Image 1: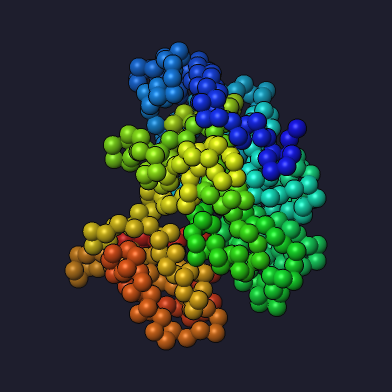
Image 2: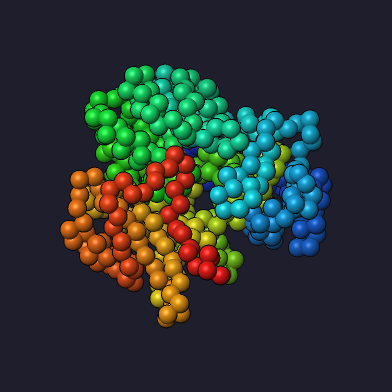
Length: 442
């Protein structure tokens, strides 16, 4: 029975690690064989690596398969429009088209088969059940609908669980407030940036967290929900327990989340193999060490990914979560993106580290941006952290305090600029926290 007690599917979620590995190997063999046989894209890549349809004898053999990157998928779709040659399922099995968001380049189209839709709805329901969503909850789904994937997957999952869903999407902020205060939503899903903005608008409307029945918030689409300062701000503004959510257009929209234990993202390992790889050596990192997430589909029919290079940094822990779930988990969630790495005066850091510092100051708003500027007079780069004063706050000593705390956290001293309250434009989608101004001077 699905949805019983603390677990959506207890047999799967508490499966012993050796049983889970056996299931993964069986499904990996099936996936590699069908990719080799049905996809010219994969057959060319596997042949070049000396991997045949029956080369997978154990899970370690996965390392023989080359990584695939988003740029390679873009190139493939451009060379073989419209979907490239990695669509494996026959056309009559196709169900839906879902491209990536395209925030970092041309969107990559992925296809869900009808069976993929069922699987995605099921493991999304599993994640939502794990952080407390139950039949009868009123779910305000502020993830984007349409071609972007998260809105649809959550919508399908709420139907499986038996919730009343408000499919509002990432828009109409005033309407978001109206539904929270009149219909009485108990669950909110959005990006962290939009969740914070909704919290700001509630405060401006004179509505306190205790005035609405909202109890659960889950936030994905960008890193930050496991960041202690961000989590505490979201929870204080909305009066919820806030949980992290993770997904990718190429892999799946909502396939990892925190459970009520808040012990890290818990991966759906019956549907995916999760690797953490050193970005330089391309070898697996020891458990607990940070590396790039690499993900392989085990059950995806239409557009399966074999060793997809996500560009996201994380670590994994194979010990059971305090909630009893046995699948791999990632404490701290997504720790940064490889392409957002800031290198300044020899130091390396990520915008999420700046986020933790900025949001630890009550005198600053939720908004910030990291900028890199060229300095023609010295030939060196300038790094500027731009923050915004909270409503009613003056910048009396804030810049110096922020600079000092950034120096301690980043081990380098950026320039600091604190703008008046309301200077930043708010977003209903993903906030752009890193801006490389050097690109406009090339």
